[in-house]
Image (cartoon, rainbow, N blue to C red; front, side):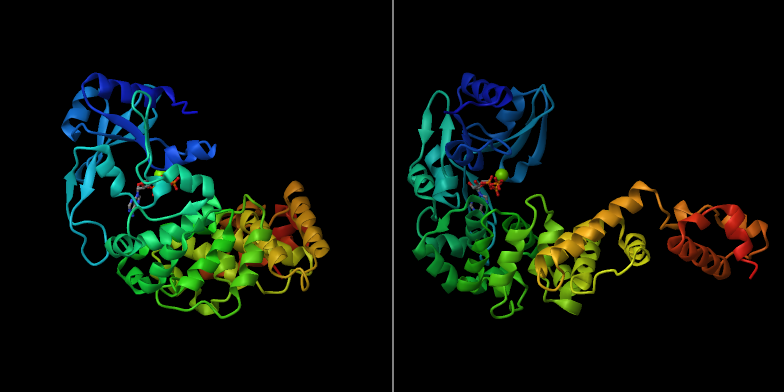
Length: 402
Ligand code: ATP
Ligand code: MG
């Protein structure tokens, strides 16, 4: 069942040949057991970081403070190798203040969040599964390693991770763990907004988006939204809308549906969640336009293409399609999609870049630089957006005279 990539096998064998223990661990083991191709392969070892570095020609200190060394394989792929560790004291429900290396694989597995993530495998030593992770994968349950109250108390982000894994894996969260998450929901406020955002984004990209309900039932939603409430009774509708999206819909589109109700507050929420400026701009643009009427003419479509680009307009149409099948009937959206394709195919002009004249041409006929020139170019562009046949210098320049 466990077919390891060549470079992963090589790293494990090299560590073992030097007298250390080494296992693949965490998400990759879980995914192999589920029959899913792992995204990346993490290795855990009894070797200390300097020993790991001594065994491989090309390594980076990615997280040396946490005992993690990245080993670069011949094919350029990177694999993280982390020394067995137990976490030190937890402060304020956040990550440990210090890290201590452990002597045994079981100790390392016991610091991990969920049983399904606390399984290790080595080609020579076989499986290490001291907490029944395989059984929980079979049952489709997310369950803390050990006592949920203690584990959520140590790191409040784990509550959100539980819901994230429920969304991504389609598993349920153990009832006791859910109850503890409800009891400890306030401590999510101690977690940095960046870490909350990362989990929220992964959650929204999960196939089992119905897991969003768990955020509401545990009360975690209020803290995910940085102390705001999701409007009552709206979440079911949001879930249906996100489900109706194309499966390749990107995270910004999903966030726009999740935040469709925020209006003017959208930017503030995204900023509080430490999204980058580009993310804030695009997501809030989707939200602002979500309920606006559909463009009624080819010209109005070009206005959108000019303002937000063709790529984003096509995505906005997809969002409009899923939010209001009653108000914006799908055939109408389909017609607009076809018109966009036609505009692009015919290379009709809707940006200054594609206009047949530029600033130099206008300067040559005596239009002064600055505001006046900007206004003149916009006027010509607007005319061309109405009538593409105007887009030649011969036809445009005379228009400036009147
Ligand atoms: P994904 O496929 O989404 O990357 P993953 O299981 O690899 O899932 P990561 O967030 O990459 O998840 O974490 C890697 C492993 O580290 C987890 O499988 C888990 O064993 C451990 N881990 C990560 N975060 C925590 C945490 N907050 N508390 C305890 N263990 C954690
Ligand atoms: Mg991972």
